[in-house]
Image (cartoon, rainbow, N blue to C red; front, side):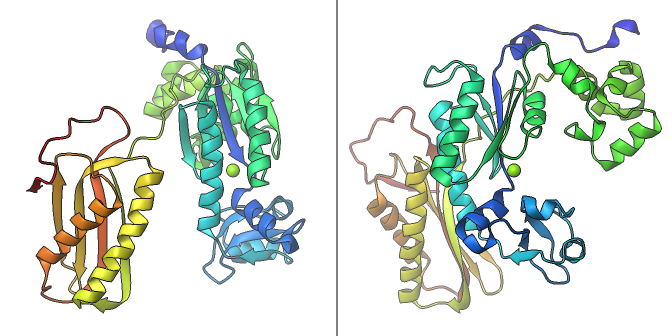
Length: 374
Ligand SMILES: [Mg+2]
């Protein structure tokens, strides 16, 4: 059984040569609120509802000093920090900041794997601007984020995702940490095991019972021991304890459709209202199509009736839908074919699918108006 350990292979060698940055915004939601409302600056702030069932979605560093954490019941947070100021979340503001930081990442590399609105892995083994140094790129990105958003980010730089994520947490807020090739195992050895990504409170308890408190303790256990106690988690733990992680950065999966929908406070049924609503949705969705730089061939109209029955109708064209006018016309045709409706609707949605993200243009047929009903 001695050779049952996961052994290095070709991919592992390749993985060792990667340059990975993990960027993580500092107290993101709370920082956006403090930025946009000067009265909150320097004060303990929690984003979330203060009511009985409220939960803290994010806490400023001033609040964290009192032990306030995200996912904590607001009642508990208030008890720990009586001066805590609760503010309602504004997701549009967070999404806008997220969009700005994403653009900064993509300026440097196409290999961006977002983990949430405020966090992403970047593979800069080959960077677009030819800067070469991952540490330098991380510093530039932090500067660009500060200049564009007036928010701070922390960054971890290393040769794999596991280490880069550990590193970004090391010097928070507004800090950088670099773990160079050869330093990973030592860095991990000193860590308490709860810092290992994927080790939750339950796994931590179990490890402590088994005498595993640090990365070094974990590295001292052989693979059979780990498999016997942690099953399929064992191989990951075995590698992580040695600072090894083979997972590649996976760029965000391209979406399959772009769409939007509206739910009405009052059900609607008149043709005029339906057409006006559709025009509205067309405006919103086409903007999203342009932002996504997507092109598609299929338009789908969805309507939910007051009895919650769903109706969808779709049309495909043989070319990429040309522009907003054509998109609106196809949507309108789908609606007109469905009229008159058997009963009022409570929701309408429109999507463009069968997407392409900017590769080869199909041959445009002579009869471009030819439609096929799906
Ligand atoms: Mg963060």
